[in-house]
Image 1 (cartoon, rainbow, N blue to C red):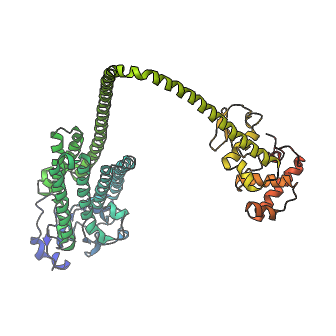
Image 2 (cartoon, rainbow, N blue to C red; image 1 turned 180 degrees about the horizontal axis):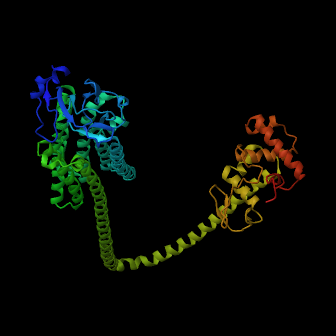
Amino acid sequence: MEQNEEYSFDDIKSDDFRSKFHPSATSTPQTLELNTTYWYKIRIQRSNELENNFILEFFDQTIDEITAYIPLTDGSYQVTELGDHKPFAERFFKHKNFEIPLDFQHDVPDGIYYFKVKSSQIADIIIVLRSVKYFVSYALSEYFSFGMFYGMILVFSLYNLVLFAAVRKKQYLFYVLYLLSVSLFEMSSDGIAYQYLWPNSPQWNQLAFALTLISASSFVLLFTRALFNFKERAPWIDKLILYTLLLRAAFFLYSLFFDQSLFNYKFIEFIPLSVAFFAGLYIYFNGYRAARFFVIGYGFVFIGFLFKLFIMLGITSLNFGIISYYSLSFCFILEMIFFSLAIGDNLRILKKEQEKMQKQVLKQMTENVALKDILNRELKSEVRLRNQELEEANILLKQQSEEISRMNELLQIDNQELKHDKQELITNVKKISRDRALSADVDFEEFSAAYPDADNCYEFLAELKWKDGYHCRKCANEQYFNGNTPFSRRCTKCGYDESVTSYTIFHNMRIPINKAFYMIFLVYTTKGKISSHKLSEIVSIRQSTCWSFSNRIKKVMVEKKVLKSTDKHGWSQLVLENDI
């Protein structure tokens, strides 16, 4: 490995530079100097047992620039450029990692391969030689694992989003946003996001991981704060969480606008993670059992975070393959499971506390009723004592009181008789007015006295329509109860709801019902000779509407052969279009 930006490839491959390359002291070489050019070389020895088609694969998807120099049979080198600074579509293999195809079909001598690497982030330089056959199998398995992982995140997110829509608790929304932030961070780290979300925006790769990291740490703190209601249970922890959020936001803004290389210090998230973990431990050890699953879930993430940190610090014994590489992802899955259990446990405890409060309220109400009964008995006892004290004084007034009571009874009887006579008088007046309106030529004002409003008209129409009793038109049942509209009737057997205007001349009519009554009366009393202009003038309705309705009335008169008679209900024969 050689670190220098001034040398050309001819310089690097010369004999003078052989001594400048030295083996890596760690299992995973890293580009610790940001935006600095590193040179790496590897030797591949050709074996007759090898297949013809192989690839070289770089595991770190965040490397900005890779220039590979592949030896050819004629001694020259084939130059291939890779890196996340190039659009995704330019890759030979449409895969999240960087792959360089090799062809061993011809007798290729043992060769030294050179790689020039430059990155704005700390990158792991892991180069693996794979056969194409093995690569396809491994890639399919890996993408299937990614599908399972992100599918679980999506399921947990949708589930908690439904809970948020149902109960309107903000902790569910914070948890959904936290899960989505974790998902985007993992996708940014493993290259899935570049492949599927922004394949034509390589510049976004330099900021996406930083934005998703602060989003995840912020929303997990907000979720912790809302889930355990630290504002009431532990105000000082609530302030600690808010101060941590402010400091994390300040660090992000400073890094964004002044020094973006600070984004590489990803383990700054250890601070908000520790604060959230401490908050969960504190609330649990202070007797809030709903925090136990939260502490367990966060414990897994905390362990995974420390595991990655120790590997980064050079403890290579912890780096033992794919389990180490994806350890934090496994911990995130366990965290999601236990966080969901914590949310469910929190709901259960809240429900239990609510039931306990309801029992206390019921008990208090029972005690209040018992106290009320005691007070009532005491009050009755005092009243009886007071009555006994006043009994002697009441003896003198007793006879007068009895006489007054008798007079009141007589007055009450007289009042009842007067009320009855008054009601009969009102009924008779109303009946006389209606009979006069039904049998004589009256103006609209007098006619309105008999039918002052729509309810009176509907009441008369109901009496006329069902004068022979109710019969359901659907099932012939004779029992009914009130329908949805005034004076309508609903069958008790089949549920058919028949309005009062159905099967009458007023069905689907938009004219006020009392004016329609009067128009029928006028057309009937004039034997259909009144003009629509005259009707429009009398009832103050448009002439076209009067013409249409009067023609409808005249048609019924012709069909039923109804002529004016002295029968007070003669005009009402025109109301029912069909026999009821």
